Each structure stands twice: as structure tokens, then as C-alpha cells.
Image (cartoon, rainbow, N blue to C red; front, side, top):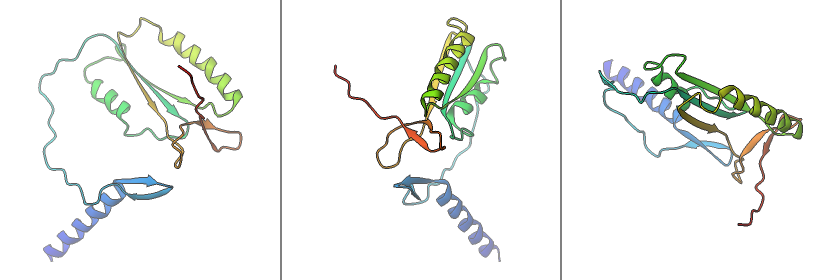
Length: 161
């Protein structure tokens, strides 16, 4: 019986692995790894650490519709919270959507307000992240949603240097 239980648990882990490590290729979810990836080890934290002083701003720009839970910007903020106060560490997540001209004008005004709020000299360290997704077949980056709620890709313009 213990062998059967272990086999069921191992099968469950393999199924979890297959669902966890997938990628989207031409609109279909496919395994990202050809064989299961096993990670062994112990997660340790230092008993003493030094963190560069000075206020830090983590500014995360997110294209509308993206889920940011578990993302690197939030993880970085969570790790630094132990060493900083609310006055010296600030995490801002700003959702952007400029899929229409009206939304673009609104975003430009919001960006001005954000720049004024943050201030130029308030934070000695500024860390910027941009989370965006792209059109599957061409790779064009999305700027937001159109009036119908569909994704709008930013089309590149030719630039002469």
C-alpha cells in the first residue's frame, strides 16, 4: 500500500509540473520542459545583511489585464520590506491602457500627475519594471484595450537614424 500511495503522490507531482511549466505557442498551451524539473535544496536567509541606504521606489507599469501576483516586482518589494520603513520604501503598481486616443490622452495626464507625486529627488534609488504581453503570431506589444475590449497592439514605425 505505501508504494501505491507514493506512486499516486509522484503522479500528482508530475501532473502539477506539467500544468505549472507551460508556454503558449501559437495560441496553444504546451509543456515548456521536455522532462520534469526537480529542485532539491534548502532555502536559507542570511542572519545578517547589509542593504544600500536611501529611499527606494519600485515603480511597476502593468498593461491592463495582466495578473501581477507572484511577479518579480512584488517579490522584490516583499523582500525589502524587512529592511525599510514605509517612508523609505515605496511600491507603486500603475496599470496603463492606451488602446484608444481618449485613453492615451488620459494616460498622458496621469503620467504627469505621477511624476509630480513621486518627485525628482524624493527617492535615491528608482527601480522600474514594465509588464506587458504581446500578440502571439507577430510579437507586437499590446498597449491596452480598444472600445470593444479587444487587445490593441502597438505598431512600430520606421525610424531613420
